[in-house]
Image (cartoon, rainbow, N blue to C red; front, side, top):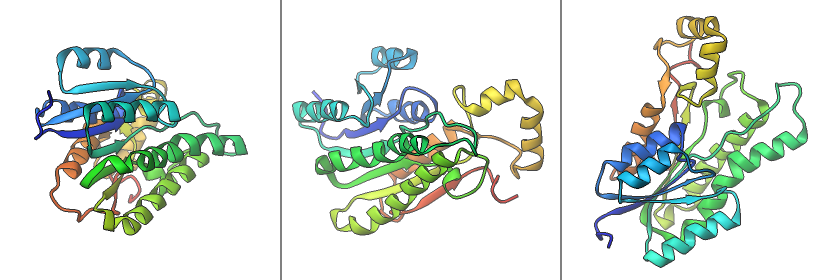
Length: 250
């Protein structure tokens, strides 16, 4: 039986990378119950499910009605209301800039824009008063950092949604914030692969393009998400917080 004092947090795209680190950040706090979502189960999900009693894993593509219905069914069974929703699912494969086609825009918008706004609108009626929503966007949504165009445009649309949703739903007491990570280094990131395939590029970026001379870590993003969820006011409502290590300022 869940203690009434526990807060219900849903995290999408939580099996690896940034989403996994966000989940880890909340898992050790006994006052949270996590509903984790990802397309596939992996070692992290399996080990976490065995170790912790305060989680429920729901497998599936969050952009599909089927997966959304699974989450709603679980919420109804447990009579849960949502304290916070962290939308991290996103990414996708894109061709090199100059080779993109309309289908690439459609795919990227489905993965990086519609999947997020669909789950927000689907679950909105299950939000508690003063619910928090955190969306993981990208610094590529605001700056030209050699990222595939379709991905950048989709994340820009997400930013616009966050700002407009915050303004138009403030009467509903929902606080929504966007985090815009820069080049994040983790096991599944493109930068960890480039560190092996092109180490000179990585050294040049650290030396000449990043004022901090360090990579943003997924744990940094997790710390920020944790802070935003636990912050007692709505002063960050509609904010887009850049965490890029200064790469866009140098």
